[in-house]
Image 1 (cartoon, helix red, strand yellow):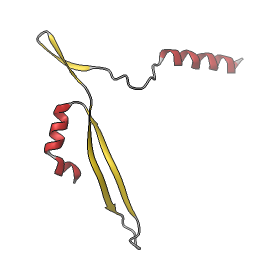
Image 2 (image 1 turned 60 degrees about the vertical axis):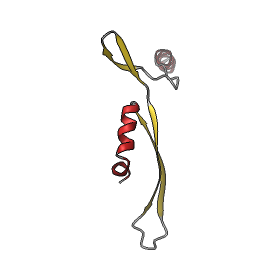
Image 3 (image 1 turned 90 degrees about the vertical axis):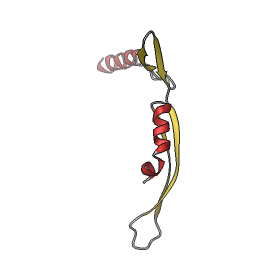
Length: 87
């Protein structure tokens, strides 16, 4: 009986919670009567190669980073300060 109740509660929660990917709530600021909507922007930082503190010197870390930013204004700021961000 307890298993059935738990199952019904879980099914009910799945019906309430929207887990579909790709839905991004639109955020904006109101200026006068118009609303400016900021869409997320992807910014690729490229790959990083880091030597690890390994006594034999045979280990390293290589990663590629891509950021999801709140809007084009943030992407322009990251692009302007690219050297500082990569450091």
